[in-house]
Length: 372
Image (cartoon, rainbow, N blue to C red):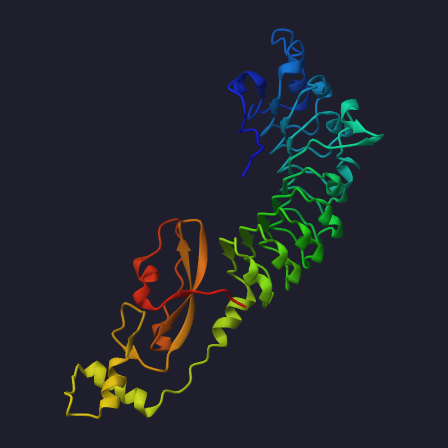
């Protein structure tokens, strides 16, 4: 996956082309003094600067001299106190714009994010060079409609705001690879999301979503789907068609609780009870002690998954969902079989480590399941 960030460069002269004012506690006045300083000769070489890092300062706006950097491709404004993103930003040929963790509202964004440079205007209409836009951690209350005009945008980060819905025009963003909307107030996902043919990662965690559109199943290139901490009670059945999906996060949703509650334990038969007692006693009846059918039944016993239990089960079992960490990246719901509800162990906190041996062993009769 291509990454267009301030940490990346396709040349060996990145340091020479990057102007780094990050973490210097600069306010707008002191920053403009730095940019205008003849000792630094910045304006003379401003045409060579391709990346400007202004992150983690005390800026409330953007410097007037910013437009002098006519070839600026990366602008990092993260972790300031910026309240307005001026239209002047759109006069730069930016590929990456990072403005996360500021004080931006919908009203303080440019009405259009299309590039207004003369050489980016075709047939009287503006285009856009932006491929990454990060507005996470601001004060947006609704999806910024102007971003749907960014037809070349690949990475859109809008997490940690107060957005209540997703634009129905999202389908226009056909180049989108990553759509991150976690930590908002979204309650509904429009069908149009299913039209994002290039989408590889969809982050909708920590919202108020109760149902997913069936169109989600059309995202054939989707690899990561993060849905944890929502109000989902079921998933579209066609979601199993997502053959490239390698990361699915469902924890802290009602569907997981319901799935477990629906697995009611039926009373064991007398044959099952007798078989368990025989196996627990350690007795090994000979071929002439009991009928052959009973001997075969005793040999079909399954051991309880709980390593602290020595019990067995035959036809009657407790089915329990346990979330297990895989590769230190995500948690997968596994279905495990127990001899009794008393064998259910409390959920352990996630650890960024390998899978416990007890969870990974096929001998414990666990299998990966898709809840819903």
